[in-house]
Image 1 (cartoon, one colour):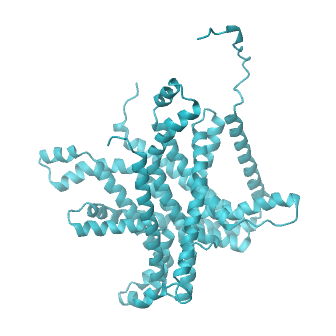
Image 2 (spheres, rainbow over the protein chains, first blue to last red):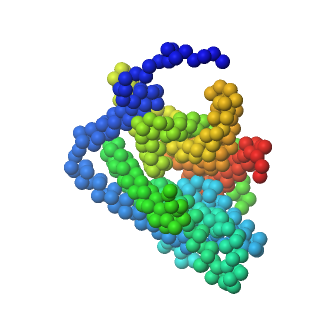
Length: 278
Length: 235
Protein backbone atom coordinates (compact mmCIF):
# COMPACT_ATOMS: atom_id res chain seq x y z
CA UNK A 1 0.00 0.00 0.00
CA UNK A 2 1.38 3.36 -0.93
CA UNK A 3 1.26 6.12 1.56
CA UNK A 4 -1.37 8.69 1.00
CA UNK A 5 0.01 11.88 -0.38
CA UNK A 6 -1.75 14.41 1.74
CA UNK A 7 -0.81 17.39 -0.34
CA UNK A 8 -2.54 15.82 -3.36
CA UNK A 9 -5.85 15.85 -1.62
CA UNK A 10 -7.92 18.55 -3.18
CA UNK A 11 -9.00 21.28 -0.88
CA UNK A 12 -12.73 21.47 -0.56
CA UNK A 13 -14.07 24.35 -2.56
CA UNK A 14 -15.53 27.26 -0.72
CA UNK A 15 -19.09 26.31 0.07
CA UNK A 16 -21.21 27.74 -2.73
CA UNK A 17 -24.47 25.91 -2.21
CA UNK A 18 -25.12 22.42 -3.52
CA UNK A 19 -22.97 21.02 -6.31
CA UNK A 20 -24.36 20.82 -9.84
CA UNK A 21 -24.62 17.08 -10.31
CA UNK A 22 -26.10 15.55 -13.47
CA UNK A 23 -29.17 14.52 -11.49
CA UNK A 24 -29.80 18.05 -10.34
CA UNK A 25 -29.39 19.48 -13.84
CA UNK A 26 -31.73 16.86 -15.31
CA UNK A 27 -34.24 17.47 -12.52
CA UNK A 28 -34.22 21.22 -13.01
CA UNK A 29 -34.39 20.69 -16.78
CA UNK A 30 -37.48 18.51 -16.39
CA UNK A 31 -39.14 20.97 -14.03
CA UNK A 32 -38.40 23.74 -16.53
CA UNK A 33 -39.97 21.62 -19.27
CA UNK A 34 -43.09 21.12 -17.13
CA UNK A 35 -43.20 24.86 -16.50
CA UNK A 36 -42.98 25.45 -20.25
CA UNK A 37 -45.76 22.97 -20.99
CA UNK A 38 -47.87 24.43 -18.17
CA UNK A 39 -47.25 27.91 -19.57
CA UNK A 40 -48.44 26.88 -23.04
CA UNK A 41 -51.48 25.09 -21.67
CA UNK A 42 -52.45 28.00 -19.42
CA UNK A 43 -51.86 30.41 -22.28
CA UNK A 44 -54.06 28.27 -24.47
CA UNK A 45 -56.85 28.47 -21.90
CA UNK A 46 -56.41 32.19 -21.23
CA UNK A 47 -55.95 33.32 -24.84
CA UNK A 48 -58.87 31.24 -26.04
CA UNK A 49 -61.00 32.25 -23.07
CA UNK A 50 -64.48 32.70 -24.32
CA UNK A 51 -67.24 33.10 -21.73
CA UNK A 52 -69.77 31.68 -24.13
CA UNK A 53 -67.66 28.59 -24.79
CA UNK A 54 -67.04 28.00 -21.10
CA UNK A 55 -70.69 28.67 -20.32
CA UNK A 56 -71.78 26.15 -22.91
CA UNK A 57 -69.47 23.25 -22.14
CA UNK A 58 -68.32 23.55 -18.52
CA UNK A 59 -71.77 22.93 -16.95
CA UNK A 60 -72.25 19.92 -19.24
CA UNK A 61 -68.88 18.52 -18.23
CA UNK A 62 -69.63 19.04 -14.54
CA UNK A 63 -72.87 17.15 -15.17
CA UNK A 64 -70.79 14.41 -16.76
CA UNK A 65 -68.53 14.39 -13.72
CA UNK A 66 -71.58 13.83 -11.55
CA UNK A 67 -72.64 10.88 -13.75
CA UNK A 68 -69.13 9.44 -13.40
CA UNK A 69 -69.28 9.74 -9.62
CA UNK A 70 -72.75 8.18 -9.48
CA UNK A 71 -71.73 5.35 -11.76
CA UNK A 72 -68.57 4.52 -9.80
CA UNK A 73 -70.20 4.78 -6.39
CA UNK A 74 -73.09 2.51 -7.33
CA UNK A 75 -70.82 0.00 -9.08
CA UNK A 76 -68.46 -0.20 -6.11
CA UNK A 77 -71.23 -0.58 -3.52
CA UNK A 78 -73.15 -3.16 -5.56
CA UNK A 79 -69.88 -4.89 -6.44
CA UNK A 80 -68.98 -5.15 -2.76
CA UNK A 81 -72.32 -6.85 -2.08
CA UNK A 82 -71.56 -9.49 -4.74
CA UNK A 83 -67.89 -9.73 -3.81
CA UNK A 84 -68.43 -11.08 -0.33
CA UNK A 85 -70.31 -14.28 -1.23
CA UNK A 86 -68.01 -14.62 -4.24
CA UNK A 87 -64.93 -14.57 -2.00
CA UNK A 88 -66.48 -17.26 0.18
CA UNK A 89 -67.39 -19.30 -2.92
CA UNK A 90 -63.78 -19.12 -4.08
CA UNK A 91 -62.74 -21.09 -1.00
CA UNK A 92 -65.86 -23.27 -0.76
CA UNK A 93 -65.36 -26.98 -0.11
CA UNK A 94 -67.63 -27.88 -3.04
CA UNK A 95 -65.51 -28.12 -6.15
CA UNK A 96 -68.27 -27.03 -8.54
CA UNK A 97 -68.99 -23.83 -6.60
CA UNK A 98 -65.28 -23.15 -6.26
CA UNK A 99 -64.69 -23.72 -9.98
CA UNK A 100 -67.59 -21.50 -11.02
CA UNK A 101 -66.41 -18.66 -8.80
CA UNK A 102 -62.88 -19.07 -10.13
CA UNK A 103 -64.11 -18.95 -13.73
CA UNK A 104 -66.12 -15.79 -13.02
CA UNK A 105 -63.19 -14.03 -11.41
CA UNK A 106 -60.74 -15.18 -14.10
CA UNK A 107 -63.00 -14.00 -16.90
CA UNK A 108 -63.60 -10.53 -15.51
CA UNK A 109 -59.99 -9.98 -14.51
CA UNK A 110 -58.53 -11.40 -17.71
CA UNK A 111 -60.50 -9.48 -20.32
CA UNK A 112 -60.52 -5.75 -21.07
CA UNK A 113 -63.31 -3.75 -19.43
CA UNK A 114 -64.15 -2.23 -22.81
CA UNK A 115 -64.71 -5.69 -24.33
CA UNK A 116 -67.00 -6.59 -21.41
CA UNK A 117 -68.95 -3.37 -21.90
CA UNK A 118 -69.41 -4.09 -25.61
CA UNK A 119 -70.43 -7.65 -24.82
CA UNK A 120 -73.15 -6.49 -22.44
CA UNK A 121 -74.37 -3.42 -24.34
CA UNK A 122 -74.46 -4.78 -27.89
CA UNK A 123 -75.00 -8.38 -26.79
CA UNK A 124 -78.13 -7.34 -24.87
CA UNK A 125 -79.50 -5.71 -28.00
CA UNK A 126 -79.23 -9.02 -29.79
CA UNK A 127 -81.23 -10.83 -27.11
CA UNK A 128 -83.94 -8.21 -27.01
CA UNK A 129 -86.91 -10.61 -27.47
CA UNK A 130 -85.66 -12.89 -24.71
CA UNK A 131 -85.01 -9.97 -22.38
CA UNK A 132 -88.44 -8.57 -23.16
CA UNK A 133 -89.99 -11.91 -22.25
CA UNK A 134 -88.17 -11.85 -18.95
CA UNK A 135 -89.16 -8.23 -18.39
CA UNK A 136 -85.55 -7.10 -18.22
CA UNK A 137 -85.40 -5.11 -21.43
CA UNK A 138 -86.15 -1.76 -19.77
CA UNK A 139 -82.92 -2.21 -17.82
CA UNK A 140 -80.59 -3.21 -20.66
CA UNK A 141 -82.11 -0.71 -23.09
CA UNK A 142 -80.27 2.10 -21.33
CA UNK A 143 -76.53 2.45 -21.91
CA UNK A 144 -76.06 3.78 -18.38
CA UNK A 145 -77.55 0.61 -16.91
CA UNK A 146 -75.39 -1.58 -19.14
CA UNK A 147 -72.30 0.29 -18.00
CA UNK A 148 -73.40 -0.03 -14.38
CA UNK A 149 -74.06 -3.75 -14.85
CA UNK A 150 -70.65 -4.35 -16.47
CA UNK A 151 -68.72 -2.27 -13.95
CA UNK A 152 -70.49 -3.94 -11.04
CA UNK A 153 -69.61 -7.43 -12.23
CA UNK A 154 -66.07 -6.31 -13.06
CA UNK A 155 -65.33 -4.65 -9.74
CA UNK A 156 -67.02 -7.53 -7.90
CA UNK A 157 -64.46 -9.93 -9.40
CA UNK A 158 -61.55 -7.73 -8.33
CA UNK A 159 -63.00 -7.07 -4.89
CA UNK A 160 -63.70 -10.77 -4.34
CA UNK A 161 -60.07 -11.52 -5.09
CA UNK A 162 -58.88 -8.79 -2.70
CA UNK A 163 -61.17 -10.05 0.04
CA UNK A 164 -60.22 -13.69 -0.50
CA UNK A 165 -56.52 -12.82 -0.28
CA UNK A 166 -57.11 -10.78 2.86
CA UNK A 167 -59.10 -13.55 4.55
CA UNK A 168 -56.46 -16.12 3.63
CA UNK A 169 -53.87 -13.77 5.09
CA UNK A 170 -55.37 -13.88 8.59
CA UNK A 171 -53.22 -16.12 10.71
CA UNK A 172 -54.47 -19.66 11.32
CA UNK A 173 -53.98 -19.18 15.06
CA UNK A 174 -56.84 -16.67 15.03
CA UNK A 175 -59.23 -19.41 13.87
CA UNK A 176 -57.83 -21.87 16.38
CA UNK A 177 -58.00 -19.34 19.19
CA UNK A 178 -61.60 -18.46 18.40
CA UNK A 179 -62.47 -22.14 18.16
CA UNK A 180 -60.79 -22.85 21.51
CA UNK A 181 -62.89 -20.10 23.05
CA UNK A 182 -65.96 -21.89 21.82
CA UNK A 183 -67.01 -19.26 19.24
CA UNK A 184 -69.20 -20.47 16.40
CA UNK A 185 -68.13 -20.15 12.78
CA UNK A 186 -70.27 -17.10 12.00
CA UNK A 187 -69.22 -15.27 15.16
CA UNK A 188 -65.58 -16.07 14.42
CA UNK A 189 -65.99 -14.62 10.93
CA UNK A 190 -67.76 -11.47 12.01
CA UNK A 191 -65.86 -10.71 15.20
CA UNK A 192 -62.39 -12.12 14.61
CA UNK A 193 -61.49 -12.80 10.99
CA UNK A 194 -63.23 -10.07 8.99
CA UNK A 195 -62.05 -7.09 11.07
CA UNK A 196 -58.46 -8.21 10.53
CA UNK A 197 -59.03 -9.04 6.87
CA UNK A 198 -60.58 -5.61 6.22
CA UNK A 199 -57.41 -3.94 7.50
CA UNK A 200 -55.29 -5.91 5.03
CA UNK A 201 -57.80 -5.29 2.26
CA UNK A 202 -57.91 -1.54 2.85
CA UNK A 203 -55.05 -0.52 0.58
CA UNK A 204 -55.87 -2.77 -2.40
CA UNK A 205 -59.52 -1.76 -2.02
CA UNK A 206 -58.53 1.91 -2.27
CA UNK A 207 -56.56 1.12 -5.41
CA UNK A 208 -59.57 -0.70 -6.81
CA UNK A 209 -61.78 2.38 -6.30
CA UNK A 210 -59.24 4.49 -8.17
CA UNK A 211 -59.10 1.88 -10.92
CA UNK A 212 -62.87 1.96 -11.20
CA UNK A 213 -62.91 5.76 -11.54
CA UNK A 214 -60.28 5.61 -14.25
CA UNK A 215 -61.90 2.61 -15.94
CA UNK A 216 -65.33 4.27 -15.92
CA UNK A 217 -64.15 6.48 -18.79
CA UNK A 218 -64.85 3.40 -20.93
CA UNK A 219 -68.58 4.04 -20.41
CA UNK A 220 -68.25 6.94 -22.85
CA UNK A 221 -67.58 4.45 -25.65
CA UNK A 222 -70.95 2.79 -25.17
CA UNK A 223 -72.61 6.24 -25.42
CA UNK A 224 -72.93 7.08 -21.73
CA UNK A 225 -72.43 10.82 -21.20
CA UNK A 226 -70.12 10.62 -18.24
CA UNK A 227 -67.24 13.08 -17.87
CA UNK A 228 -65.32 11.43 -20.69
CA UNK A 229 -68.41 11.26 -22.90
CA UNK A 230 -69.22 14.94 -22.42
CA UNK A 231 -65.59 15.81 -23.08
CA UNK A 232 -65.51 13.89 -26.34
CA UNK A 233 -68.77 15.47 -27.38
CA UNK A 234 -67.46 18.96 -26.58
CA UNK A 235 -64.29 18.26 -28.54
CA UNK A 236 -66.10 16.90 -31.55
CA UNK A 237 -68.21 20.08 -31.66
CA UNK A 238 -65.53 22.66 -30.94
CA UNK A 239 -62.22 21.03 -31.92
CA UNK A 240 -60.79 22.87 -28.95
CA UNK A 241 -58.13 20.84 -27.17
CA UNK A 242 -58.65 22.59 -23.85
CA UNK A 243 -61.74 20.54 -23.02
CA UNK A 244 -59.43 17.55 -22.62
CA UNK A 245 -57.34 19.57 -20.20
CA UNK A 246 -60.40 20.40 -18.10
CA UNK A 247 -61.30 16.72 -18.03
CA UNK A 248 -57.74 15.78 -17.07
CA UNK A 249 -57.79 18.28 -14.21
CA UNK A 250 -61.13 16.97 -12.95
CA UNK A 251 -60.05 13.31 -13.06
CA UNK A 252 -56.72 14.11 -11.41
CA UNK A 253 -58.42 16.12 -8.70
CA UNK A 254 -60.78 13.26 -7.83
CA UNK A 255 -58.15 10.53 -7.96
CA UNK A 256 -55.51 12.47 -6.05
CA UNK A 257 -57.86 13.69 -3.31
CA UNK A 258 -59.27 10.19 -2.95
CA UNK A 259 -55.77 8.78 -2.64
CA UNK A 260 -54.86 11.28 0.07
CA UNK A 261 -58.09 10.73 2.01
CA UNK A 262 -57.54 6.99 1.77
CA UNK A 263 -54.00 7.32 3.16
CA UNK A 264 -55.41 9.33 6.09
CA UNK A 265 -58.16 6.79 6.63
CA UNK A 266 -55.72 3.91 6.58
CA UNK A 267 -53.37 5.64 9.00
CA UNK A 268 -56.31 6.26 11.32
CA UNK A 269 -57.68 2.71 11.16
CA UNK A 270 -54.30 1.05 11.66
CA UNK A 271 -53.09 3.33 14.43
CA UNK A 272 -53.29 0.49 16.95
CA UNK A 273 -50.87 -1.53 14.81
CA UNK A 274 -48.19 1.14 14.55
CA UNK A 275 -45.14 0.69 16.68
CA UNK A 276 -44.52 3.71 18.86
CA UNK A 277 -41.49 5.59 17.61
CA UNK A 278 -38.38 5.60 19.84
CA UNK B 1 -74.34 -22.55 -33.43
CA UNK B 2 -72.60 -24.23 -36.38
CA UNK B 3 -73.35 -21.19 -38.52
CA UNK B 4 -71.63 -19.05 -35.93
CA UNK B 5 -68.56 -21.26 -35.86
CA UNK B 6 -68.57 -21.06 -39.67
CA UNK B 7 -68.27 -17.28 -39.39
CA UNK B 8 -64.86 -17.78 -37.82
CA UNK B 9 -63.52 -19.42 -40.97
CA UNK B 10 -60.48 -18.07 -42.76
CA UNK B 11 -60.71 -16.30 -46.09
CA UNK B 12 -63.57 -14.51 -47.83
CA UNK B 13 -66.55 -16.16 -46.17
CA UNK B 14 -65.30 -16.08 -42.62
CA UNK B 15 -63.95 -13.47 -40.27
CA UNK B 16 -61.19 -15.53 -38.66
CA UNK B 17 -58.40 -13.84 -40.57
CA UNK B 18 -59.72 -10.35 -39.73
CA UNK B 19 -59.69 -11.20 -36.04
CA UNK B 20 -56.23 -12.74 -36.40
CA UNK B 21 -54.74 -9.59 -37.97
CA UNK B 22 -56.28 -7.57 -35.14
CA UNK B 23 -54.89 -9.94 -32.53
CA UNK B 24 -51.48 -9.78 -34.17
CA UNK B 25 -51.51 -5.97 -34.01
CA UNK B 26 -52.54 -6.13 -30.34
CA UNK B 27 -49.58 -8.39 -29.59
CA UNK B 28 -47.18 -6.21 -31.58
CA UNK B 29 -48.40 -3.08 -29.83
CA UNK B 30 -48.06 -4.64 -26.38
CA UNK B 31 -44.61 -6.06 -27.15
CA UNK B 32 -43.40 -2.75 -28.59
CA UNK B 33 -44.72 -0.81 -25.59
CA UNK B 34 -43.19 -3.07 -22.95
CA UNK B 35 -39.46 -2.25 -23.40
CA UNK B 36 -40.27 1.45 -23.74
CA UNK B 37 -42.37 1.41 -20.59
CA UNK B 38 -39.86 -0.63 -18.62
CA UNK B 39 -36.93 1.56 -19.61
CA UNK B 40 -38.77 4.78 -18.79
CA UNK B 41 -40.06 3.20 -15.57
CA UNK B 42 -36.53 2.26 -14.61
CA UNK B 43 -35.29 5.81 -15.24
CA UNK B 44 -38.21 7.19 -13.22
CA UNK B 45 -37.42 4.82 -10.34
CA UNK B 46 -33.77 5.92 -10.38
CA UNK B 47 -34.87 9.55 -10.41
CA UNK B 48 -37.25 9.06 -7.49
CA UNK B 49 -34.45 7.45 -5.49
CA UNK B 50 -31.96 10.21 -6.21
CA UNK B 51 -30.60 12.63 -3.60
CA UNK B 52 -31.53 15.66 -5.65
CA UNK B 53 -34.89 17.05 -4.55
CA UNK B 54 -35.51 18.67 -7.96
CA UNK B 55 -35.15 15.34 -9.74
CA UNK B 56 -37.35 13.54 -7.20
CA UNK B 57 -40.03 16.21 -7.56
CA UNK B 58 -39.90 16.09 -11.36
CA UNK B 59 -40.28 12.31 -11.42
CA UNK B 60 -43.05 12.37 -8.81
CA UNK B 61 -45.10 14.89 -10.77
CA UNK B 62 -44.83 12.71 -13.87
CA UNK B 63 -45.88 9.57 -12.02
CA UNK B 64 -48.74 11.29 -10.17
CA UNK B 65 -50.21 12.71 -13.36
CA UNK B 66 -50.06 9.58 -15.50
CA UNK B 67 -51.09 7.25 -12.70
CA UNK B 68 -54.14 9.37 -11.99
CA UNK B 69 -55.46 10.00 -15.49
CA UNK B 70 -57.79 7.46 -17.10
CA UNK B 71 -55.87 5.56 -19.77
CA UNK B 72 -58.50 6.47 -22.33
CA UNK B 73 -57.94 10.18 -21.66
CA UNK B 74 -54.16 9.75 -21.76
CA UNK B 75 -54.42 8.07 -25.14
CA UNK B 76 -56.59 10.85 -26.55
CA UNK B 77 -54.46 13.61 -25.03
CA UNK B 78 -51.25 12.11 -26.39
CA UNK B 79 -52.77 11.40 -29.78
CA UNK B 80 -54.26 14.86 -30.21
CA UNK B 81 -51.88 16.87 -28.03
CA UNK B 82 -48.64 15.35 -29.29
CA UNK B 83 -49.83 15.96 -32.83
CA UNK B 84 -50.58 19.62 -32.01
CA UNK B 85 -47.26 20.04 -30.25
CA UNK B 86 -45.16 18.43 -32.99
CA UNK B 87 -46.87 20.43 -35.69
CA UNK B 88 -46.44 23.62 -33.70
CA UNK B 89 -42.70 22.94 -33.66
CA UNK B 90 -42.53 21.67 -37.26
CA UNK B 91 -44.31 24.75 -38.54
CA UNK B 92 -41.50 26.91 -37.23
CA UNK B 93 -39.30 25.35 -39.88
CA UNK B 94 -41.53 24.24 -42.72
CA UNK B 95 -45.09 24.42 -43.97
CA UNK B 96 -45.61 20.70 -44.21
CA UNK B 97 -47.95 18.99 -41.82
CA UNK B 98 -46.42 16.11 -39.99
CA UNK B 99 -48.66 13.09 -39.53
CA UNK B 100 -48.16 11.28 -36.24
CA UNK B 101 -48.44 7.52 -36.59
CA UNK B 102 -51.32 6.01 -34.60
CA UNK B 103 -49.21 3.06 -33.62
CA UNK B 104 -46.46 5.30 -32.24
CA UNK B 105 -48.83 7.58 -30.35
CA UNK B 106 -50.59 4.54 -28.89
CA UNK B 107 -47.24 3.12 -27.91
CA UNK B 108 -46.15 6.37 -26.28
CA UNK B 109 -49.43 6.77 -24.39
CA UNK B 110 -49.54 3.19 -23.09
CA UNK B 111 -45.79 3.32 -22.47
CA UNK B 112 -45.91 6.33 -20.17
CA UNK B 113 -48.82 4.91 -18.21
CA UNK B 114 -46.96 1.61 -17.92
CA UNK B 115 -43.76 3.42 -16.94
CA UNK B 116 -45.51 5.33 -14.14
CA UNK B 117 -46.77 2.11 -12.61
CA UNK B 118 -43.60 0.11 -13.20
CA UNK B 119 -41.47 2.83 -11.59
CA UNK B 120 -43.48 2.08 -8.45
CA UNK B 121 -42.71 -1.65 -8.71
CA UNK B 122 -39.03 -1.14 -9.52
CA UNK B 123 -38.67 1.38 -6.70
CA UNK B 124 -40.09 -1.17 -4.28
CA UNK B 125 -37.72 -3.84 -5.62
CA UNK B 126 -34.75 -1.50 -5.22
CA UNK B 127 -35.70 -0.83 -1.62
CA UNK B 128 -35.93 -4.57 -0.97
CA UNK B 129 -32.23 -5.10 -1.75
CA UNK B 130 -30.23 -4.61 1.47
CA UNK B 131 -27.47 -2.00 1.27
CA UNK B 132 -25.06 -4.65 2.60
CA UNK B 133 -25.21 -6.47 -0.74
CA UNK B 134 -23.68 -3.56 -2.62
CA UNK B 135 -21.22 -2.80 0.17
CA UNK B 136 -20.02 -6.42 0.29
CA UNK B 137 -19.62 -6.57 -3.50
CA UNK B 138 -17.64 -3.34 -3.48
CA UNK B 139 -15.52 -4.62 -0.57
CA UNK B 140 -14.72 -7.73 -2.63
CA UNK B 141 -13.34 -5.47 -5.31
CA UNK B 142 -16.12 -5.75 -7.90
CA UNK B 143 -16.33 -2.69 -10.08
CA UNK B 144 -19.48 -0.60 -9.97
CA UNK B 145 -20.66 -2.12 -13.23
CA UNK B 146 -20.07 -5.72 -12.14
CA UNK B 147 -21.70 -5.03 -8.79
CA UNK B 148 -24.74 -3.81 -10.63
CA UNK B 149 -24.74 -6.64 -13.18
CA UNK B 150 -24.05 -9.63 -10.92
CA UNK B 151 -25.32 -8.53 -7.52
CA UNK B 152 -28.02 -5.88 -7.86
CA UNK B 153 -29.73 -6.78 -11.15
CA UNK B 154 -30.52 -10.47 -10.41
CA UNK B 155 -32.10 -9.51 -7.10
CA UNK B 156 -33.91 -6.58 -8.68
CA UNK B 157 -35.43 -8.89 -11.27
CA UNK B 158 -36.46 -11.38 -8.63
CA UNK B 159 -38.21 -8.76 -6.51
CA UNK B 160 -39.78 -6.85 -9.40
CA UNK B 161 -40.95 -9.74 -11.58
CA UNK B 162 -44.32 -10.49 -9.93
CA UNK B 163 -45.32 -6.81 -10.00
CA UNK B 164 -44.09 -6.29 -13.55
CA UNK B 165 -45.91 -9.44 -14.63
CA UNK B 166 -49.17 -7.96 -13.34
CA UNK B 167 -48.45 -4.75 -15.23
CA UNK B 168 -47.89 -6.74 -18.42
CA UNK B 169 -51.32 -8.33 -18.03
CA UNK B 170 -52.75 -4.87 -17.45
CA UNK B 171 -50.98 -3.56 -20.55
CA UNK B 172 -52.42 -6.35 -22.69
CA UNK B 173 -55.92 -5.33 -21.64
CA UNK B 174 -55.24 -1.62 -22.02
CA UNK B 175 -54.25 -2.06 -25.66
CA UNK B 176 -57.97 -2.56 -26.31
CA UNK B 177 -58.49 1.16 -25.58
CA UNK B 178 -56.30 2.02 -28.56
CA UNK B 179 -59.25 1.15 -30.77
CA UNK B 180 -60.68 4.62 -29.94
CA UNK B 181 -58.01 6.27 -32.09
CA UNK B 182 -58.96 3.92 -34.92
CA UNK B 183 -55.92 1.69 -34.83
CA UNK B 184 -56.99 -1.71 -36.15
CA UNK B 185 -56.27 -3.79 -33.08
CA UNK B 186 -58.27 -6.84 -32.01
CA UNK B 187 -61.00 -4.72 -30.37
CA UNK B 188 -61.57 -2.51 -33.40
CA UNK B 189 -61.45 -5.43 -35.82
CA UNK B 190 -64.13 -7.08 -33.70
CA UNK B 191 -66.24 -3.92 -33.90
CA UNK B 192 -65.88 -4.00 -37.68
CA UNK B 193 -66.80 -7.69 -37.85
CA UNK B 194 -69.80 -7.11 -35.59
CA UNK B 195 -70.91 -4.26 -37.82
CA UNK B 196 -70.83 -6.59 -40.82
CA UNK B 197 -72.32 -9.74 -39.28
CA UNK B 198 -74.78 -8.36 -36.68
CA UNK B 199 -73.63 -11.02 -34.25
CA UNK B 200 -72.31 -8.87 -31.39
CA UNK B 201 -72.63 -11.34 -28.55
CA UNK B 202 -70.80 -14.15 -30.29
CA UNK B 203 -67.93 -12.08 -31.64
CA UNK B 204 -67.37 -10.03 -28.47
CA UNK B 205 -67.35 -13.31 -26.53
CA UNK B 206 -64.79 -14.75 -28.96
CA UNK B 207 -62.65 -11.64 -28.54
CA UNK B 208 -62.90 -11.90 -24.77
CA UNK B 209 -61.65 -15.46 -25.01
CA UNK B 210 -58.77 -14.41 -27.25
CA UNK B 211 -57.76 -11.87 -24.57
CA UNK B 212 -58.17 -14.57 -21.94
CA UNK B 213 -55.94 -16.84 -23.96
CA UNK B 214 -53.26 -14.14 -24.14
CA UNK B 215 -53.49 -13.70 -20.37
CA UNK B 216 -53.24 -17.45 -19.85
CA UNK B 217 -50.24 -17.82 -22.17
CA UNK B 218 -48.57 -14.85 -20.46
CA UNK B 219 -49.05 -16.35 -17.00
CA UNK B 220 -47.41 -19.56 -18.15
CA UNK B 221 -44.38 -17.64 -19.45
CA UNK B 222 -44.31 -15.39 -16.39
CA UNK B 223 -44.49 -18.41 -14.08
CA UNK B 224 -41.47 -19.88 -15.84
CA UNK B 225 -39.62 -16.58 -15.62
CA UNK B 226 -40.35 -16.34 -11.90
CA UNK B 227 -39.08 -19.86 -11.31
CA UNK B 228 -35.94 -18.90 -13.20
CA UNK B 229 -35.49 -15.68 -11.22
CA UNK B 230 -36.00 -17.53 -7.94
CA UNK B 231 -33.51 -20.29 -8.76
CA UNK B 232 -31.26 -21.01 -5.80
CA UNK B 233 -33.74 -19.40 -3.40
CA UNK B 234 -34.91 -21.44 -0.47
CA UNK B 235 -38.64 -21.73 -0.39
